[in-house]
Length: 251
Image (cartoon, rainbow, N blue to C red; front, side, top):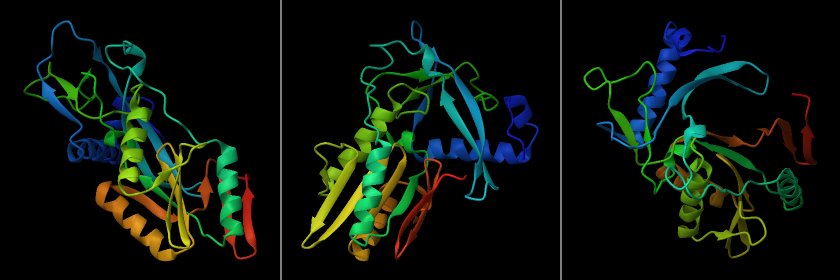
């Protein structure tokens, strides 16, 4: 199925309408925003839809993904955002993690938090336009006041990282002193390691029960969209076997 380039094209296709509605349902479940009268003398940030076909390892389309993003280029520093920096794991860190896992007999797993950035709290007063094609009929001139972050906002990665890292620290994980995207928890002789890459989370343990427990606490706190053995990451195909881990960039 072709990815629409414009909202008008998407609104003619039932499958994409469903995908857009799923995204807005996610907003409602996460209590992302509140519809309010348009305030005067406030910067109102535009919104737009981005359409993507989600592919599997074989390059086949598995589902449609419609994402509503804020047009962050119109944000005003000091008003719509302040702190934006969020640490991101380097590829070298992922390679080190894979090497560590092989040497300690750890199978790595991957989880994906559904619409991760919608979980990040924001401190600034930010207003955005209603989603194109889904304006409130009774209040077409109203705008949304954000409670949580939105993809496209300059502070979105920072807000999500703060939310996730604070949650892990509350659960007795230790943050890496050199790599702030690496977390670990030691229990007697066992270790659970977690690597964050924006909204992707890689984890593994010397004790399978620790992995199971970690999955459970994450599912209780966040809505998860994918969990399983690490097989595909940053365009690299990963094959974990008893004799070693193989990485391929064919796909």
